[in-house]
Length: 163
Image (cartoon, rainbow, N blue to C red; front, side, top):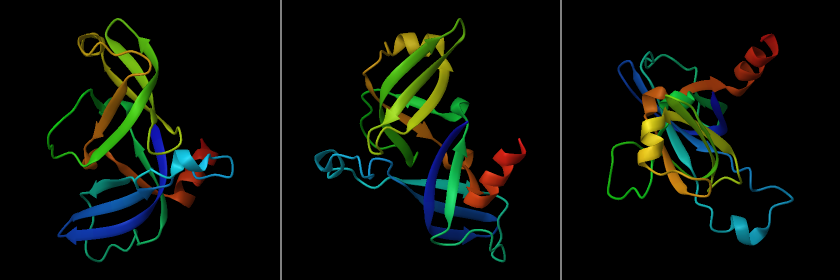
């Protein structure tokens, strides 16, 4: 399971649907970061769609610390992607590891925007071969907003402690 920490920056509600925007925290902005490496980093805002929300649901609030969880099976990969697409959750990265299997291949990539936070994707081995993926390639991970699970930071910590 992929997990990125962030802060809610906006919520749009309509009926039972809520679109929640989350600004992902930049792991590169630490005391050990080299300023020249972090100056050009653009903010990364990801979107989670909640289908069970209502106008009276006050579970999520602006400026709330959250974790976005999403399955590695829900991360599609693109190489040399151009043009516009409807997926707003686009994660630019560099492949750090490839674990091929007979049917499926796990691809690990480091987010370019965010100081090396790692995201994993599992795609078919056939697709990995067709894309000619190799360590060091620049790729984009694509995740539909309805596949992003939103958890309050304290709720996520409680669940991990119980596991």
